[in-house]
Length: 323
Image (cartoon, rainbow, N blue to C red; front, side, top):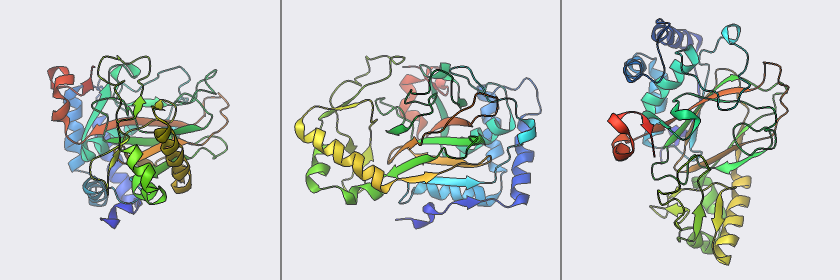
């Protein structure tokens, strides 16, 4: 097992400056759009020009995501004085090329290929994760209560392999924490009976209302699949329903084990996290938004390691999965 993948990366100031230069070059055209395939190709080329320590860490993580299944990179360029107010409307996204969006897209190109889902935030590749007034109790990216453990789009045939998150602003009280729990640390805490039950097709993970329900998402499936000693996971605490008593007991044991094994990371501006969505569930601790334009602001994109396998779901070989 590649232990190197567990080491976080802190960039030195010279590397941060170099990344900022490449990102600003991508943003030099005021008409540049993040979702333009030609701009994405420029971002892919930009990735190759970034400092070696960043590219090496991401390459190692892609080969094996380690015991934690998450990589934290500190010191990426986010200029607080250049940021507008934190978005406050539902489903906000970033369409215009900015430095943070360029950084996020370049890293997505380094770990795989950026991807989005048409049914989620209109298929935008760079999405805002911000608190929305009136959605405080929603267990989703617009809420501010505890966000329970889940894989992104666990119900979908083509779930993302990686979730990439870049912090632009921390919450006022610096208490919001990204929680991650990797199967490689959770499995040893489970009984043999629970591991067996989690590997049987006795669970249904429902899609959100915005997604079509005709893609087999409601068919019973196992939560664990693949190599028994290093399986993949697909689940969402609020959307996964166990269909048998043993499945119910196993899911409860799994949830408790995730809480035991969880790592909590309080992101600061310029911190980027790559979560291996295949083996790691994630969530967020609660926080208190103030709706004053300076609330917590994280931007997100997804990445897929083998884009071709979703070719039948992407018109014109683009980056948006439409069904």
